[in-house]
Length: 326
Image 1 (cartoon, rainbow, N blue to C red):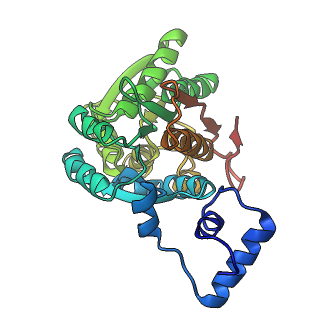
Image 2: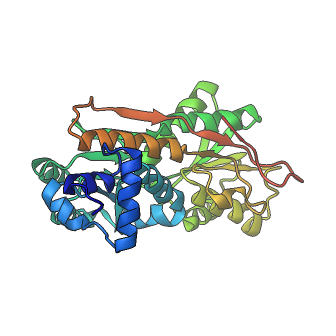
């Protein structure tokens, strides 16, 4: 092809490889004329690099936060790396996913789910680096996450500053590390302010859990709260709908509702709740850079990067959308 060596052709098709821009353009132009396409699988066998990383993600996360996959895909694509998605319905599927990752000989794994120690050891023995996304990592592993504890402090302080003092909490299920950190931040800030927690309910990050929480409190005669904080926006929206449509409460004039994640529907005027937005693009870019370094074999400290969230205010009546503030 255009009188150049096989190695020059290979470098021309390899992102980041050393080849003169003019020579690369000549090779790519000739390849287009000849209809040539490099054999990615053959190159992976020869170089022991697939330029593909696995992303382990729960179906629920992907459904409510499609921007996570988009941001990670864009961040890795900028480095010449593609993402292979593995969706989970529950934790028990991790074993099958690990087997698939090993059989595809992927370069690394981004885990947005808990991975048992036995499966981490399998990946480690195969020299497949693992980076945890938006959750704490075990010893020897890096992670990139939103600072969920700080987000809890922020949302609680926002409501306290608006004069609220009696709170109801819609917690996440007990094994949710993210939900626990958020509520730990909320409780720490409420305790510092001397505010009261008068009602609690535990759910599974679903809209119905917010509905059930408010309905159950009403059935129990608990109604002396002036603010509700839920562990995510879906539960918060469910709680607000229960207040408006089941209890005929004027919201937020009587009771203000807040959540976490700043999903698109939280900004709709029919819902319009205060929330904390995760810095997804920053987290994705950091994950891509750390993983790229690990794939190259660079020895890095076990980084635990935490990024602050941004407060999304509920919009006052008449404004088209809430403002997001740092």
